Image (cartoon, rainbow, N blue to C red):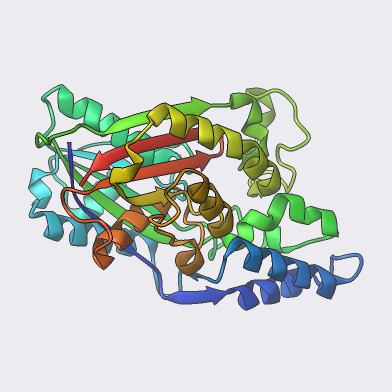
Amino acid sequence: MKLRAVSAALPSRKVTNADILELIGEHSADHFTGDLQRVQRKVGNLLSYTGSDTRYWLDADERPIDLLRAAADSAMAQSDIAPEQVELLIYTGVGRGFLEPGGAYHSAAAIGLRNAHCFDILDACMSWTRAVQLAESLFRTGQYRNAMIVNAKFAVSRGGAVMPHVFRLERLEDLLSTLPAYTLGEAATATVLTADDVNEPWRFRFISRPELAPLCNITLNGYEGYCDPSDKLAHNGVGVFTSFGFDMHEVGRDEVHAVFDQLNPPVDEVAALFTHASSKRLWQDFADTIGLGSVIHHVYDRIGNVVSASVPAAVASAIGTGQLRPGQRAVGLVGSAGMSFGAFTFVL
């Protein structure tokens, strides 16, 4: 399997850490008990500590489908693959407008993919990585030659699971389940993969820890019937993003080490390391411990945590800057709600 092209499209509204603090003040003023300015300072310090700086959200006249179409058109142009040649479309966005049908169908219609088989993969921040592995498996059947993976991560600026709910704080302790929301950015990505023979196949390794599923969730009405009880589920309300980021990073450190060890890539050959964009500082510290600190390609500080679009957006950035060139090796590391941990390596 060959990665032929990857493209990212960002909305135009630039949101700084200072803007985040203003939004917390705006939505918490009538609800918070205590010193709200102290909490805002704490959030600002925590965001700076993680390496957060800016992220991009939809402006009033922008639509997710238009940015997804722009990313897809760019990826097809880069790869010299025409819309009618795409035989498989996988949608991996956590952000979505439909529970039924899958987002892949509306995406295919918008892009003009008349011959593509369509379906979704939903596995939180791991969705893109799972989709790439599945695409490679499907290529091996001989049924498909060209595939596209798309993502439209737009869940912040127009209501839904984040705004304004998690910006409405009542007490300091609320930060334990809301802080990751303040790092979120929005983006669309498109990845074109082909079944071309290459010198070395992609390799993947995964670890799943389902007992940690309550640490990060967006529940639906009636969720109680589909899980065992936990005080962390719907902690911020049904349908509202809840993420215990401190706990997730604490647990995830050892698991990411373990999955990386299972992958066991040739470290000396790696030109670029891509990680889930949840914290620049913590991922940099991890990269340093495995000898890849000098090649990690960060996007978190510039575009925020764009969930399952984090890795493809970083790959697009690294190719654009020339850090990753054809024939060079890359490694990806992802930690995700679920919880799951993934590592993969490929040669561009």
